[in-house]
Amino acid sequence: MSPGHYVALAVILFVIGAVGVLIRRNALVIFMCIELMLNAVNLAFVAFARMHGQLDGQVVAFFVMVVAAAEVVVGLAILMAIFRARRSASVDDANLLKY
Amino acid sequence: MVLAASSAESTTTAVVFWVLAIVSVGAALGMILSPRAVHCAVLLAVVMLSLAILYLTAGAPFLAAVQIIVYTGAVLMLFLFVLMIVGVSAVDSLRETIRGQRLWAGLAAIALLALLTLTVGHAAIGPAAPAGLRYGAGNVKGIAVLIFTRYFFPFEVTSALLITAALGAMVLAHRERLSPKPTQRELSRLRIAGEHPTPLPGPGTYARHNAVDFPALLPDGTPAALSVSPIISGRPGAREAVSEALREAAGALPASPAGSPGPVAPAGDGTGSNGQEEPPS
Image (cartoon, rainbow over all chains, first blue to last red; front, side):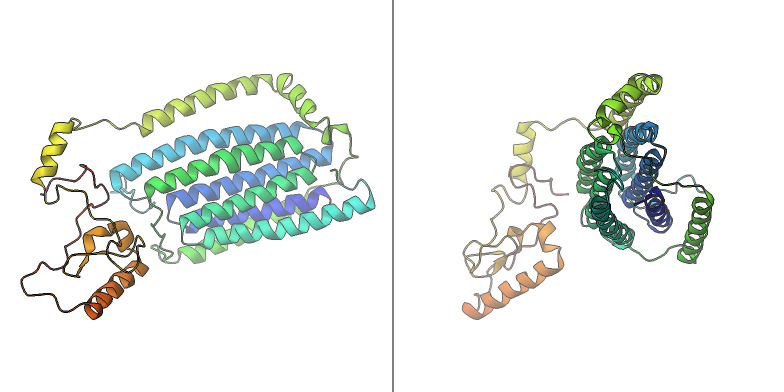
C-alpha cells in the first residue's frame, strides 16, 4: 500500500470527525469527534514519515498524542464543571454568554 | 511489517489495509450517527484500535503501542468515566435545533472533502521509501534518538504541559463544600425522623422472581414499589415488569381487604438505603 492510500483514509476520517463536530449536540460526543480528527492527522503523519523514510513524522505524531491527552483531561474537567452548574452536557444549554 | 517488502507481504498488507479502512470508516460513521454516547465511545475504540494496526503496517510499531496504551487505554477510559458521571442514560437527541444545520454541515463537509482531496491529489505523494531498520526492530531506538536530540526542547516543554493539564484538571474538577458535612448523629436523626427508619425492602422478596426489576410483595400481596430502585423502574422494560407483578398479585391472591395499605409510593431517592436518605421536605 502506498502512503497515498493512508493519506486518503486519513482525509476521510478527518471529514467524518468534522461532520460529527458540526451536527452533534452532546459535548462529550463532540470531544470524541475531535479525537477522531486528531487520530486521522496522526495517520497522515505516519504515512508521510513512511514516504520520506524519516522518523520525524512519527515523533510529531507522538507529540500530538501527548497534547491530545492533556487536552482531553482539561476538556473533560471543564465539561464536568459545566455539567455541575447546568445539569446538562448539551452544547445548547451552555448559553450564558449569549444574551 | 513493512510496506511492499515482497509481493506476498504486500498482498497481506493490502488486505489488512482495506479491511481496516472499511472497519474504521464504518465505525467512524456509526460514531457520529449513534444517539447514545456510550455507543459512540465503543465505536471510537474500534476506530482507534484499527488505526493502531494500521500504524503497525505502516512501519510505526512504537506509535501503535502508544496508540493502544494512551488512546484506547487512558483517553477512552477517561471518556467512559465522565460518561458515567454525566449520565449514561442521557440520549442525545438527533433532532436539529438550528434550522438547516444538517444541510449546511453536509455542504461544508463536502466542500472540505473536495478541498482536501484536491490538495492531497495535487501533492506529490510518492511511493514508500525503501524499508530500513528504522521501521522494524530499530524503530523505538530511532524515535528515542530523535526525541532526545533534535526534539529535546519540545519534549521538555511537554512535561510542563502535562503538569499544567493535571493542575488544571484538579482545579476545574474541585468542588467546594457549601454546607457542612453531616455527622453520623445527624444522619441517624434524619433517618429516624424520616419515613423509613429501616433499610428499604429488597427486590423480589416473596415474589415469584427475584430479579432486581421485580418488586417485592407486601404481606397483603401488593407489590412494594419502593423495593425497586427508581433508576431501574424508570427504564421502559421495568414498567412492564411492575405491571406484570401487579397482574400476578391480583390473579394469584384474593383481593386485599379494605383498609390495607396500597402499594408504597417510590421515594424520591431510594438508592441510598442505609442512613443516606434525604430528609422529607
